[in-house]
Image 1 (spheres, helix red, strand yellow):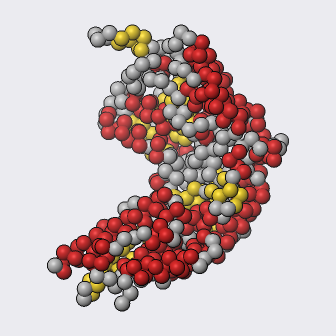
Image 2: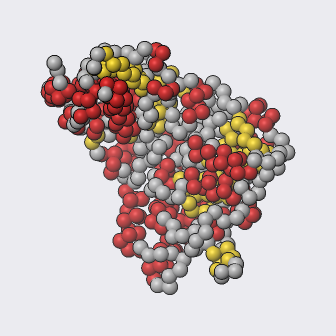
Image 3: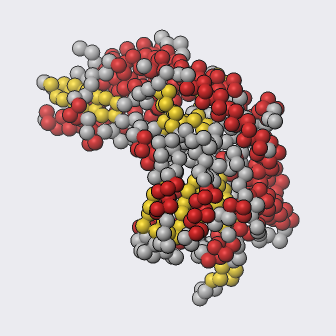
Length: 141
Length: 404
């Protein structure tokens, strides 16, 4: 099984192969296109993550003891960022999600290449993912 | 004529690199860049004059006071105010508007009406909503057309003897539309209403004459016209300013203070409580000198050419939609390409060293009107070049390929 840490290391390695930020953006745009899309019925006001300049919705389902995330955004680069997060945190146990650190974001230099509002949005997305983990962890106990 | 090569040498920031590339600065409507001549004035102030004004008996204070008051006179002359004391130096446009809104909260009642326009920046909406909450007065809105201009027929139907105040921006920050403020002022005056014009977006491009306009209040910020941030002005007709209560209490704004009663200072000090942004005020004056040395006719002509070129070239891109197509506009281009999110487009342009603004531009009602999340806004200044516009157009083309 791929642990959160091994997936994060994979991403860090992938990002180190790119020569410039334009290529990283191109990659994120591609990732955005492969994002597992949220069911339209969850694209409601209360699923919107506050703190993003573009609209972002994230939903989580528990299958067996793993969380499966789906999401969407009206901006493609934002979709790419969520896709990265989902790749790390989907199909993981809520407990592992809660314990995971997120320093891969700093390692790939993502934050410094995002505008301050987008970086805030990124923090809000991670917070939301962890909130889902808390909620389902309680359910599992 | 503008010698843009020579002018650019005045702006050190234009030579820095962003993301490894030469900076293209097209966010001038958010803030303009600062020429060395203005930077030098700030450095000189702190190197030679720094002291508190209007109260010291010593030489430094006298010289700083003199420089600050000279700046006020420069501003007065630039806007052609009748008196220097009609120029109140504030922290900027937003504070100037709040000062008036606060003052009128004691003068309005539930039967009164205020009119704003659909093209306003949030700073010219929210203070008036707050004023209406306090006083019970009604807020009416002049609607806009699809071209991004004001519906002047609708404006006339909103006017009545109940109208006390009208607030309109001279130029829309989101779309660049130049509003027909002469007509608005004369029609508002005909029903006895007073008019405040938000000139923040106009002053980098236009030299307003407050007496010829017969405007009651005119506000702007220094940083939009090559001055520093944190300083701006409120022009008001003296009899109107005298009738308003002070905005903030403190030092500088008093004549005498006892625990029984304080009497307020005369204009402009009545509205300038506390130690002001002295270096900022002096630099505001220097910025006005700089702009006038370039010349507003030259600025207007050159920027019109830049706008025309950018509009023509950008329109060649498939899916390009420009918002704000008034024939009378400043050098602002607000646009989207097909269904691409403005934030995505802006992020890619940033990677290419091109600074634009994305989002709702603090004018959410305008975005709601067009049913869009926001736009990309490129706003030009007299120090921008045609080559920079080529880079923008090329950048947008590349970004569109990436994002579609």
